[in-house]
Length: 465
Image (tube, rainbow, N blue to C red; front, side):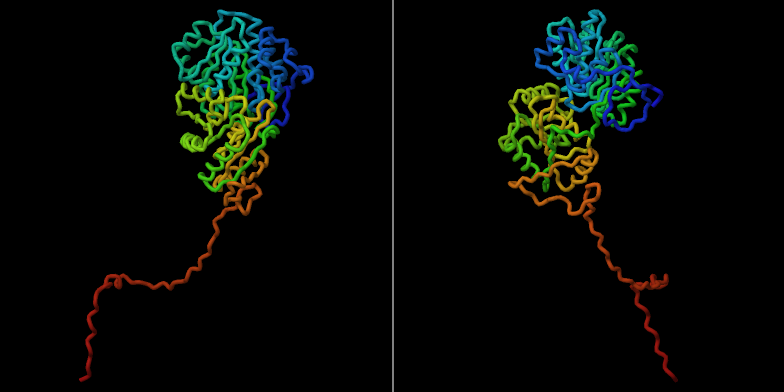
């Protein structure tokens, strides 16, 4: 990975990684010293916005990230979903822009995120923080007016929140100047890698001011590409790792309910949504077709449900999200598109109609609940063909989920009879030994083959004279 040096502020439970680290020379402030936002000495406009919007105490990621970012250090930050990363990078970035006004410098801060929904949320939070200031913020994503987005740069929009694809389009037309960019922020970097944005992000970074500050945020350091990307977009950086994906999630109760088949799963799903207590619920499936197919039966059962997936155009997705946020519908059936980036208050239950394809997807799905120290429940419906996949996720996370039975809809599948040490089921196919009778081989001559089916001429009788 090269000879890049890294400063380390705090690294509890950090997995073994191959890179060089140098000891930090600064002493981080204690948690007690940073018990409220006023401890950071932020610009008065930001402090007023925090008070107005009810932000009182900084979260651990904010306590450790904001002081380092205020000193203009490059950072690689690993913290779990829902830990308050948005404020952790917005506050120090906006503070530096406000105390050093330069309204004719063009775009001074760029935030890249993987999804439109996450971009919209960060945009709204940024607007709240900048209320009453002269700084302006713009949102650039696919599905919106291209010319309006081009005009944002002509109007010297100081802060841009964007998805990589649309920014790359603007760069190819030379209408996205970043030569004066002061801060580049990559949020949900691991998700951007999963979605294939690696090359786009690297291209955008190459077109930015070389002397910028870069902040890279990821939910995990175990992703193979995160550290490689950090090496390419960061020069000398400080690593702040508050967790790994395998950390316990004490605020989320994780349950498993066994099912016989998909029809049984649909019955269990409807029962759970009608009998569990929640303000909002998320239901995940592995495919768009399955997500769509689940909605009508749920509505027929009296559940206020709607669907969200990647085939929907931007206006339709925004309409669905507004219905869900406003409580017009309280159940959102979605694909993994919604597993990251959605920060909606009141999601108290997450149901996996299908077992996620891997442990990382599982973590990001259930991370939609139990956010900001609130409690949440996750329920995964598991049929016999998914048992080994579920066992693999438990083994990956080094956790054992609660087995739950619903008496009203008890099924036949009660789990494998025999398990391996890994928790996976022992193969169910029994080897049947068949006794093969030994058949004596008869040698067949070629001349016999030629005479098959032909009558032999009778042998003449010989009489004695």
